[in-house]
Image (cartoon, rainbow, N blue to C red; front, side):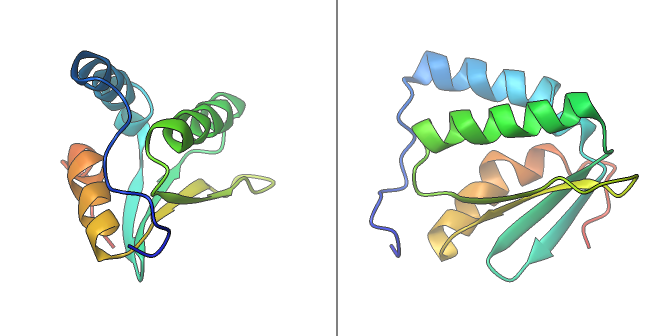
Length: 111
């Protein structure tokens, strides 16, 4: 593993299940596009203040429980979409796909 952190969430099982349910019903449910990029995935949302706050809260939380994930947030001016890149080595990419991407891709075209 490149960053030395094991691929293991630091939340207990009930906490993890509750957090995933919260993410799926909130932030992940509002994803408009998923793009497969070289080291992971890029998720895009409409550019609103509420979405920007939710994406930043998501990153703050996930950095605590999943230190093996790399994040890059793009909060552009104007009407361009907000983007979040979730990246890592091959094992991390599979974790991202299973934990996050497969929960948002129904009805969304992967690019």
